Amino acid sequence: MGTYRRYVVTVVSVATVRSRRLEYSESTRDALVDSAVELFTKRGYAGTSLDEVAKRARVTKGALYHHFSGKQALFEAAFDAVETKAMSRLGEIVSGPGHPWEVAMAGLRGYVRVCLDPSFQRIVVHEAPVVMGWARWREAEEHFSFGMIRSTVQALIETGEIDELPLEVTARLLYGALSAGASMIASAADPRRTSEDVIRSTIRVIEGLRKPEAAVAAEESTGRSRRRHR
Image 1: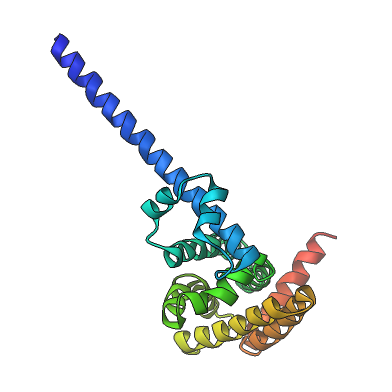
Image 2: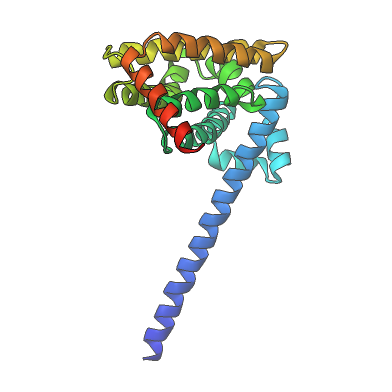
């Protein structure tokens, strides 16, 4: 019985050590990615060294190479972190309650607000197409921004808010417009004012796709709601 107890204690101890090592490894990786996001945002890809990233994360350069094969791999991890955070925020908006059209417009405004974030501007809009290469960047965007836009357009078609146009074509055209808007915002002398122009213009374009009867029904519903709350 004593031998069995020692065996159990040994197994538990080994499992605990492995768990702690895994937690330490994950926290080290997170620290490196956070450090990379901050430095890439401030100095850009070319102006940031791996030594600086490791120093700011308070780890050795060897620990950095344990997690990342090099600078580009670290940049891609930073890109993923920025995009994941942005899309998580937008996902909460477009999956929330409310009228489908209003939810979609809230998502549009949310996307443009994301474009005002310095990390999104520098890492996702300016640096990623160059550092990752156009093909790799577009592939990543398929997973992030385009995927969100496609889902939103699909919801508007399925709920009868916009005309039943080809989903893929419509989503890609809208994605192209928003990508252009993001570039304009990131390069503007007054990003906030430019973002307002992008929102106003994009909404007008999307309104051209909306079914007249859907707009009328929404106005009537809003009117009834207002009268009930008087």
